[in-house]
Image 1 (cartoon, rainbow, N blue to C red):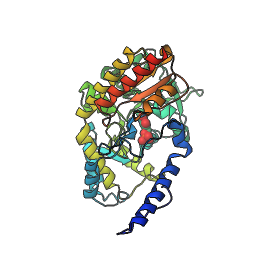
Image 2 (image 1 turned 30 degrees about the horizontal axis):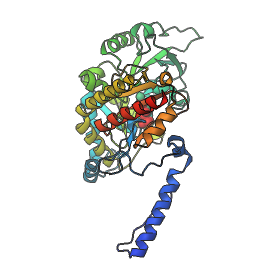
Image 3 (image 1 turned 90 degrees about the horizontal axis):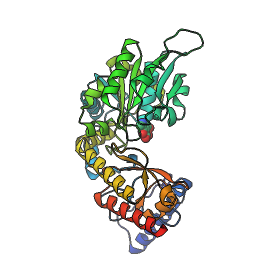
Image 4 (image 1 turned 90 degrees about the vertical axis):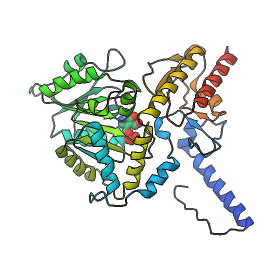
Length: 402
Ligand SMILES: Cc1ncc(COP(=O)(O)O)c(C=O)c1O
């Protein structure tokens, strides 16, 4: 399906239709037997082609991530109506409209739409920094440090100082302030950026902590960046407006393609000078895009349709899931603040692989492994029925295993 195109003639005979169907099946089988998918699909179960699309009979409820949401019919309709200008020429109305909207929501002057959250974060850090020696403080679990392929070293030549929060939930003002380096001693790389993440593993970083960290950063001339891929969830849950979070940072990245459910895209927000620099660097990164309007239109619709109410509902479902699993003896390893549930099945003596295989028979997909720990993510295309089924199936295998 990746490299061969399929053309359907305007009118097909019955025989042609049968052979077209056969060819389609062959393509689908090929696609699903590649090694990437084999890693995630239990061998005993063949998932149908559809995923979270509510219009499809063969629904799959995919708890691996909130990035797996599929575009809705309404998004396709918005895409058709989007403007078709060239964004490198800054000519595209829908892209500009989305950028202005996100800037407004977060209380910033300017915004830049990017292809991914990784690109938005890396552009932010590169735009804040001038030249080495320099360092960045962040949580050791943060996406910018752990999951961006070493991008900070590559793009910004910066040392990252990862900190482990003592409370295992979020970094505190004390932990950050005691690790700031201001010295011009030649042995050290001075702190130039503090990068926070909210939510991180679904956990909310309290505004009061952010405020204290920001106050000290501002006094010391250190830039504050927020990886707000899921700041939407934090804001929906706490009912603290996005622009109240925005006050304490110099830049924020926000993802449209995670909990909000848009197919592609993120935004970086900041002041005009900062975004101008990020736009220039985006081109250097190869991320200048042309007719981006259709993606911007889908992203704007995703915000308008899902933020904040649908996100709040996903948090409620995540809590239901954690309560249900916990009743069956499965340990919930972290508090459930928003849409993520971390589980450990060691106490009930089953592996995640075994759980995944049983769930797969009911069209429920999770990240599997041979161990006992995994992450479950609830998104707006997961229904209350899927949560109930998940809990029921988990209960059945726990019982069988007793
Ligand atoms: C907190 C966080 N930040 C940034 C990203 C990067 O987003 P992308 O996959 O669009 O590059 C992710 C991806 O899951 C994320 O979870």
